[in-house]
Image 1 (tube, rainbow, N blue to C red):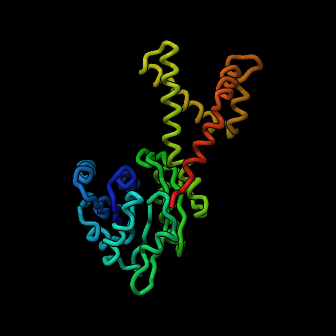
Image 2 (image 1 turned 90 degrees about the horizontal axis):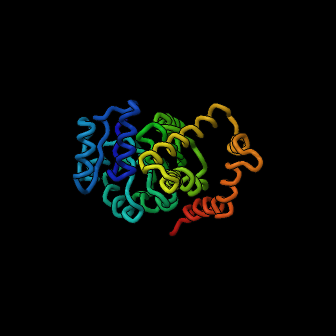
Image 3 (image 1 turned 120 degrees about the vertical axis):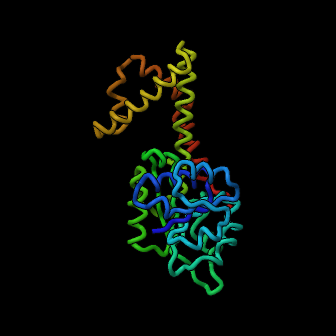
Length: 267
């Protein structure tokens, strides 16, 4: 399987690295295109066998699967550029463009003859480069073999799920944006540790280990977070006082508000 990735930004670059690490596709069968060479050169330095180009159309024409990993405001220009080079009878289009639906992509991809490709929407998060990512997949005019291949590919990079397209905005908020939200908690907890007397380095190390420990406790027990919180929260104890103070400051609602705000798609 030959893969083209149009766009070498944070997500396009992460997908390229994740695919190479999966070992399901050889690096020499991946071509990445980008208008500037800096990010392409960085990928080439990591994996010399990856092909790179600044010509999107050339990259797309040679692939079985074409990943669109560009910013939403560049989608129309890029699709217009590569569309004459595409053969929908042989190629699959995979969009990693946040906030653009299958219906919107169909309008851009519709050929002069009225044909449309197999189309998949994929929302990963940047942790796919570490093998700990979360990837959501949906699609239109799909084929089981392609769906299963994509699930297998992204499962090597973490957790991969096939969902209805209607859930994509929520998936984006929970896992893709969610990386930033989790890091925001780590940042704030680290700053709190500094206020309590630790150095920044010590505090960050403690917070990271505590987060890892909490995850491992959940995995080992199979319980839900509420049960595990109850195990370490004694009546009148310090943990309870801390949780109450966080709730009085709006912690729970702030998290929910952030998730809801990042599901809003502007047309």
